[in-house]
Amino acid sequence: MSTLLEQLYRGKIYPAENIVVRTPEYKELQQKISDEKIYFNSILSSDDGKRFEDLGDMELDRSAVYAFENFAYGFRLGIGLILEILNTSPIDTKE
Image (cartoon, rainbow, N blue to C red; front, side, top):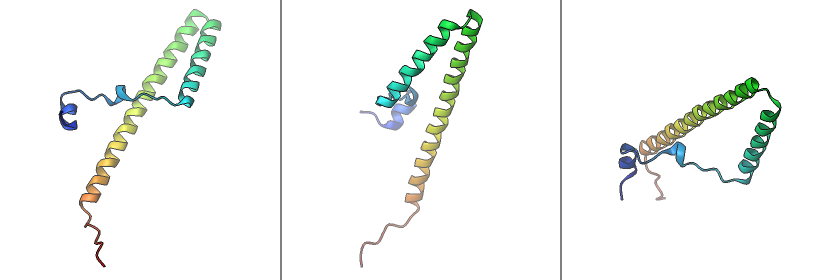
């Protein structure tokens, strides 16, 4: 079994692709979004439908950037906590 460091180095870990949201709230929201897209695509002209689709693509791109920033912040926070712990004297449990 390879270490996390080796898996990262060899490109075997893909955090953005491995996250699968399975909550009922997410599924419900996803269904509502899908229903709304279908509705708007049915009433918009061809040009407006294309613009609406492009808007959705831009929102996905924005979400990906936001997700990366959240991931990076969490990673930095975790490393900061580890460094803080390593630089702290152990708790003396003796009285």
